[in-house]
Image (tube, rainbow, N blue to C red; front, side, top):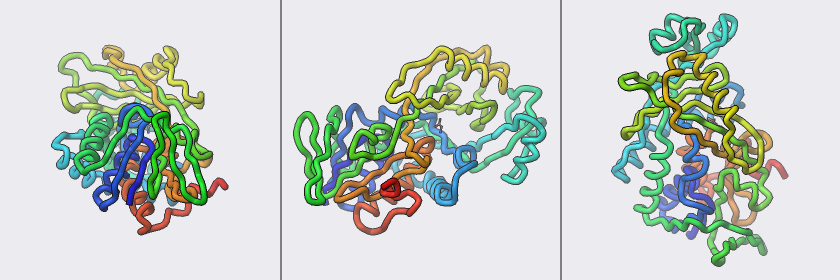
Amino acid sequence: MKVVIIGAGVAGLAIGWRLLQAGAAVTILDRGQPAQGATWAAAGMLAVTAELEEAGEAESAFALHSNTLWPGFAAEIEQVSGVGIGFVRGGALLLAGNAGELEAMRSRGTVLDGAGARALVPMLADDVAGGLWAADEARVDNRALGEVLTIAFLKAGGILIPQEAVVTIEERGGTACVMTPYGRHYADAFVIAAGAWSGLLANIPITPVKGEIIALMPPANQPLPGPVIWGNGVYLVPRDHEGEKRLLVGATMREAGFDTSLSPQERERLRAAAQCLIPSLKHWTLSDHWAGLRPKSPDGLPLLGLLRGNIFVAGGQFRNGILLAPAIAQLMADIVLGKTKTIPAFDPRRFG
Ligand code: GLY
């Protein structure tokens, strides 16, 4: 079976890798370089508690399943590539804004009071009320993940064609072929996994949601916080891998088309919000500021499965593209190979 995947982000690469392992011939086309879109811009959190507070049953179950796949997935790609991806199950502390919020958190799991939260993260502000401790949250160096998945995909015999944007998908009699500025690609199956750009292909209802993130570098000998921290409208993700020692502070949410320009106001807002949680951050150096585009569907749920004819889609991961990657890879490979059907809540045809 020959499969062409459109998009070499974490989803496209992981699906392609699983399909290669199952014996398919896989080519990935990317409009730019591999793993340079949302995969690069993300903060690398596997926020199975923090991001899923309002999630429905199907989304929660799928995210929890992916979270359990993550350690094996990380070990497997690290072993194939010989390169680490900084997978750390370091937990997450979801700070309460006040005593009432803390009380409400008790129904969700283990709660720490202010002293308990500061015992875990001594640099927290004195007035922190406490928070929910989510021990099963993890994080990964998403930029390393992109590189390592690319290596794994190529080592397994995949063909990767960068700088080849799909212009149109031609559909005739239930089969498709894709056109790029350089020619046509034919395949038994096409998988659209182009992140926020998926919405430009085949009338898929996916739109970009911009997120800006800043990175702060600690003064010499100052440690990073141990867990991921959420509070005051921001998240703080420690990134301590391959010589990088920074705290990522994110992220904004803005529907502004494909605009990825950086806003000094948002940069300062992120920094100020983070400093309310950890006052000593005012002494840390701002070392970077970037933006990426999350792919969002109208109901906020992913689109995973057959769209029509021989066109499949793996999109709409919204805020959870890194977390969901192992489960999406397995599910989509099985769907494309005809071994399973999609999860109804994620059926790409639900929008008509
Ligand atoms: N999951 C983090 C974000 O979307 O900003």
